[in-house]
Amino acid sequence: MTNARSSSKAALALIGAGFLLAAFAVTSAFGTTLLSLSVNSLSEQAEFVFEGEVIAVEAQRSGSRGMVSTFVTFRVIDTLKGDAGAIDIELKFLGGTLNGEVLEVNGSRLPKLGERGVYFVESLSRDLINPLLGWSQATFVSELAIDGDKAVVTREVDGGLQTIS
Image (cartoon, rainbow, N blue to C red; front, side, top):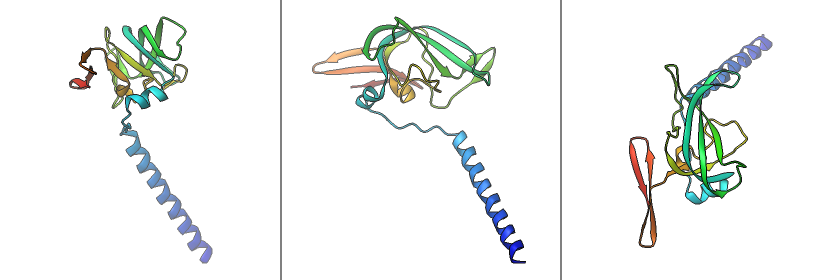
C-alpha cells in the first residue's frame, strides 16, 4: 500500500511540475522583455557599428519552418566598429508581410526603405530574431544637430519621433 501511495504522489508531483512548465512556456511565448542599453553598452557589445541607408527591403520565407522574414539591405556609408567586408550588407529580421500574411515580433521594428541611421549589429553571422542589439534601441536615425557643445539625435520610434540629446 505504501508503494502505491508513493507512486501516486510521485505521479501527481510530475503532473504538477508539467503544468507549471507549460504555464511558464505559454507566458514566455507571449512576452518580449528587452533591457534598456546605453549608447556605450551598445557600442561595447556590438560586433559591427555603421552609419548606413536602407536600399532594399524584401520579405520572403526562410528557415526550416518557412517563417516570414524580412531581408534588409543597407548601404554602408561609414564603419564605426568592426568590418562587414562589403559596401552593402544584408540583415535578416524575423517577421514581415508576405502575400497578405503578417508575422509580427513584439518589440521589433523593421527598418524602412530610405531610412538612414547609425546601426549597432549584434552579429553578422548568427541567425537572430533581430540582428540589431537591443532591437529598436540599436537604431539611431540620422537627424543630427549640434547645439553648442551637445549633439541632438532624432530617431524614429513606434508612434513617432524621439529626440535624444
